Length: 149
Image 1 (tube, rainbow, N blue to C red):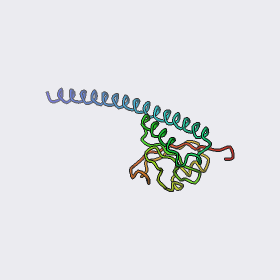
Image 2 (image 1 turned 180 degrees about the horizontal axis):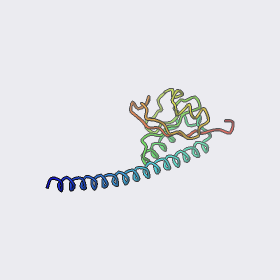
Image 3 (image 1 turned 90 degrees about the horizontal axis):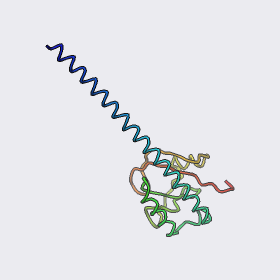
Image 4 (image 1 turned 60 degrees about the vertical axis):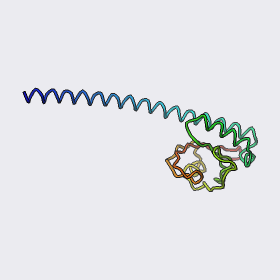
């Protein structure tokens, strides 16, 4: 009798493990699709921002522009990420979707900024502590390059 009960429990354990593995595969597939869409959306948003900046004459023309800030705020409310920010070639924030006027901060030592200085076009970064919002952020950034580099 004890042998039959043990065999039954072993069978149940194996079936439970199989169901758990199948569920984990499903969750993993959903998470992978979601992350892919987040990055695709981020790419589309950054492309739109790059086009708008070019139309307006470059990053330097955005400093203090409340209209561009409002446009970034509008975009940020419709995407998975919370904040959008444009920084200049020195690593200084120019426009931030979250706050107007844009606070001063030196971001030139950040890994994502250094990667762009070294030639990387898009950078997916690690979670880091924001110097502006005082919260932990996950970064996705894209370099905007002028014709002169």
